[in-house]
Length: 629
Image (cartoon, rainbow, N blue to C red; front, side, top):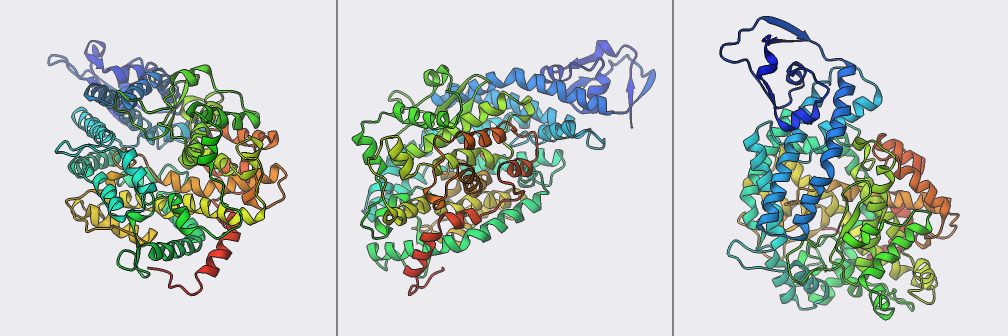
């Protein structure tokens, strides 16, 4: 119960801001809005005298009205907001950055208002959907700003600048680098000095982010506390239908299931790199220098396959060479991925997808080349990607279209607050699940190869997949562990870089190739840190995709080894998949997982099943080696 004093002539003195006016059309007075804590200027004039006292108690009916009007407002603003960010991502310059910052400021302001308003109903007993939607409103922001216009604007400006700094790739002294070119060097060069230069140069861009990032953490933490969370990390972890600390513990539990496989892979890779580069560069008892693993962040190692591959009479399929031999264009690669989903029973993507997506890096402007999938409305789906005709991008395209088909499935079935994946790991997992079906069998069926290799080619195939997926798991875990520590203060600003490399050594067995200090800001060299994209979703996706794949393969009737299964062309598997996609976030993710797999918790044993032949081989290779670091 809250007492509000209202003048008789309150209508003349109650002035709603634009967001509150749109979000609370159901309110006939400013009394309810004040209780809901939306941003309202509602004060009597100097001459007005309090004459009546009104007692207002929020009810379940008020909660339903609040949710209904919030959904109307979100629906109205969604397309315009996404177009602002789409233009910025495709035309990176000062003007689009300013427009995106303004749009982000307005969206954050609305999100804060909605979150604070939703919080006012916490004490009520409500039906399932109303409570779930209120929770979605409370948790809808990535970085909640305080209910303060100046700080909301400051936060939007900081995040836009961080994003633009990464996209431009220029140092504070205007020395500019192209991430794609540097990444190609790391992927293809055998010259250790060139590898080190490429690795180091990209990390010259991020030190200028450090001050802004620290201030961003301070503002976001203040906003998170306003919503009742101890810090932004706890706020992020609260979005998984379980207590925040339980979620962190569950991540560690699942990591424990797969760590022995990772340790075997790391031991073998380190031994092979030692043979290539010598003891002075790669010690057999220390973490692996990060610049030698074929990837800018050492998060996936498939580019060093030739250095660590198992011997075989049947070499691994070189998909990059096959794409070139078959004269695939970038558009044809995307068409092939779309055809995979169509073979499962999904409808074609709309014509606008082909007209409005970005497939090739333009020559005349800066763009954010990081691959992403967009739903700008319930009918407008796009991807943004600077496609290269490589095996990696062939897989990434399948992944990105997984996002689009997931988006369309729930957009057509669910209310706006349920238009999302069961949890954010599910969204990443769907495309990755499809990628697991890019097997030799699939490549033969689409005509990319003429013959499917026999079992003697399994170890090379599995090694390629492990270098892509298993190698990623600890990195997928540690990025948010670092941020959780930053947000809760366990990692103070003066230890940002030290803590980053401590986690990388502990979890990955990977170290910086040269001395790093606190004048560096190496976390900022990874897009998702300045881009403020929570990263746990990628770890969850790596676990869930194998869980999904194992179940879909059972449905499709596959009887061979799990790593040889492709669900391409199986309508029953597609039907099962679509039924889960259509659920969106309308139910706890445990319900969605159960609907797909019959299990209610994540289970990494599917990864162990998938890579069982490789694990046996790795352990044999490592028998005489000193593993660990």
